[in-house]
Length: 573
Image 1 (cartoon, rainbow, N blue to C red):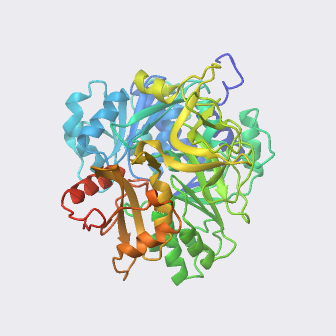
Image 2 (cartoon, rainbow, N blue to C red):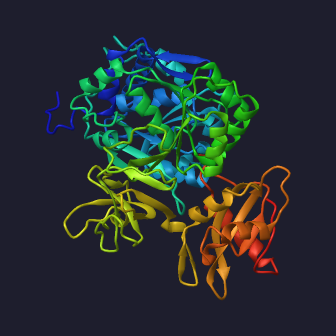
Image 3 (cartoon, rainbow, N blue to C red):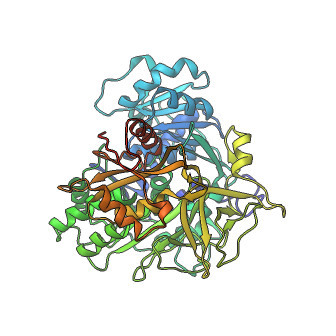
């Protein structure tokens, strides 16, 4: 037994999951395609994987990458890697060879679990990955790449006996290491610029900061048994997790539900189809849907309006990554007036910081709230969240000064393998407190809530005035002709940068730049109104539904060069 050096030691994610499994072994934990796994079955399969990894030489603290679409094996792999005392590494399935090489090399991954179709890209970069010594392949109907020399995932699990010696030649039971809340949790995040960075947490900290779900006023769990007892007593809610598990929002929502003894439902489709998603929600009696912003919420709401009797048990919609706009909230209210709509605020570097819910909804944040606000862009934050001035000092409530949103207390150890970026994002203030800077800017309202303005990395500086793209995007999305929009800076000889909007139109809407600007002028200060509007077939988004600012900047730059007038333009993409 490891000595309990601190109260956090028992709070490894593997220990917590084991405690919940003991409490609710026959409850359904996971639905993914045709597969339905109880907590006992999920534990059995993840334990088999853990034994395989240990027998293959994966040692405690080493990193194991997972390259897969949403499927049951993603969850099994994540839990199995943790059970082996190793560290799961999330890999974006959209990465090209250069990005894949960077993540697998930067993370020092010693093993990889990958779908056959995605593993092909690994073949090209394998010579650059000397640490990668073991590969497990998941069947997905594609031809298997023999040059990888990977073992079959199902064969590997079948060869392990969770109660006795493995049938793969290993003598005696494969002993699994003890785990601790001091063990690491690693989350790679793409950010808005540059190669992905790995955010390194302690497991006890990520549990407290992002995963522990509790009702307002309920004390934090003191032991894993407290978590298990709450799981046994809870209502077995069913949540559809639409966010990719290789991203923080999907991963944290799934893990949070599992540690509450609830049911996670996954869509195993490789593209987003509203009709298919809602068929799944209806068939599985889903109570809550986790999604990412308007890009998912709008088409779902529109489909429900055509079939209003679908999904009678759906009562809650939670958006992470980007808030739902008033127009999309209105669509959901038109379908069902009492549906609970909530926006979660957080990030890979900060965990879950808070939420914004409509006045008639109920939801719980990751921490005890310090205040509440009904404003769509005002978020109720936990007590460890502040808005900092330029000297890293918290701004008081009611201050008009714009500052950086940050968290203290349970925050990451830093960026894996990157001390320079760590010093920049996780600074220490004059009083010796470490902070995690979210990258977002905001103000502190008089009631203590935080008004989100947008990311500093994409802020537009036009004639000395700062414009936060998300504020302009929210206004444009409220126009009935606008389906989606992204706002970026483009070069301007006089202003330095000009506010540029890339707009995709709703069906049957005609381009009308003047109407869009008039709509903005009565809702925004003049310097925030887009001086250039480009109409595009669609606004590109990342795998998790967030705006693709790099693509937009490229399109805006190309179209600006070919546009004669500084006030209008058009592009088709």
